[in-house]
Image 1 (cartoon, rainbow, N blue to C red):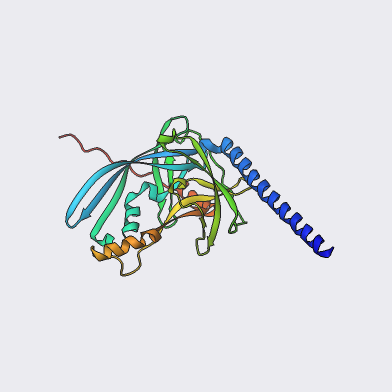
Image 2 (cartoon, rainbow, N blue to C red):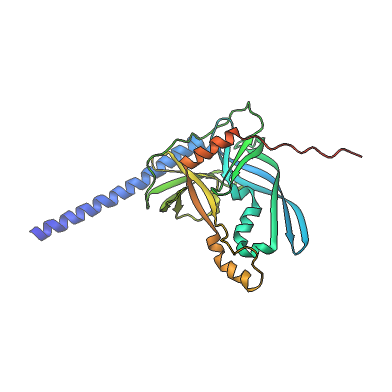
Length: 286
């Protein structure tokens, strides 16, 4: 009788846990859908014209690229947070090249920036701050009088835990008609340090610049690329076999992570006070 009772209680408990997990999954989906209806206009596309300069073995090449990145408006003034690597292809290439990058010098310069809103409106803007260490960059519209749909960021005192479920609110590219997009994710690890960050199951670059939300529907942080800094002695490495060795390490050179919302709030305050880059005057006609 006792064995039967124990087995029955185990079965009952197992069923209760299964129902709880299903209910929890349903709850986060409902919260995600409600959040998207409320905040999807704050997820925008940032268009950039970037001048890329490369110098290798005495040969130089200059070219202009048209890039797009997903950003999230975090202030009614239009201040938008984006992933820093998405607007700076040179820094990302340097991280991937590592020591072999000593043979290749790369720099990028942003020539034009536009914020594309959900309704197709294009808004002239400037990149006003870029923190490569944190992987955060901020874009601000030039029209200070215009008001934008925005996500309100709040300080969090309760960091997530490994295996916590979260969701991300993003936007598809042009081929997907720039539709608002939702995704579910899971916290894999909390990496502690002077600037802690979260590592998730999703290793996709499609979430970069998008906000992650906890199950309560509050912003948790921003997806960015964490770039591995080259160690002393790595710079100036040769090509050939050294290059092949670096290719095996590329997977460790960059890592998609979530920068906590508290860090985003802190750096955003600096971006609000930052001056827009000075416009370069066109050379006078001779």
